[in-house]
Image (cartoon, rainbow, N blue to C red):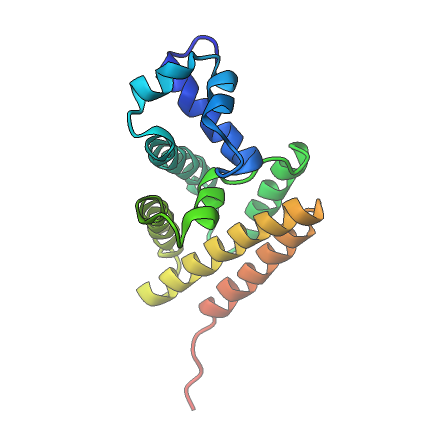
Length: 195
């Protein structure tokens, strides 16, 4: 982080702290210390304080995670890839000793009913991810509605599994969630039976 500019260090430090401990547990002094930035530089770069930093973290992390997921999906077959993608995510969490979560998820959970601006920013990121997933599933012989439903099932299962994996300190929830989503994908590919 040392070679980044002050603003970048603040954003990187904030995202890391949010992934590890959530937004509410993260104070501006801790952000300043972790970023190795003078405390006053926070308000210089982010006059709106913690909320302004959080908005930027949501946007940047949304792009970063979106790009990462995009690379994972690029060569993956939507008809069969879900279990492996979920297991890969679980192995990554395991390698981090379950200490990190999706920073957008942690913010959304904390502020969904108390801060409309941050809720709205998080919702925009989740909608973008849902659109990308629906486009990926759209490669299959399924309707647009089915693609959207599969995308929603995937993101819901993944984000919920992240919480359980961290809490139980096990990848079992994410592996089983991946198998469950795969069952939904397989079912969507079966032609409807006509009586």
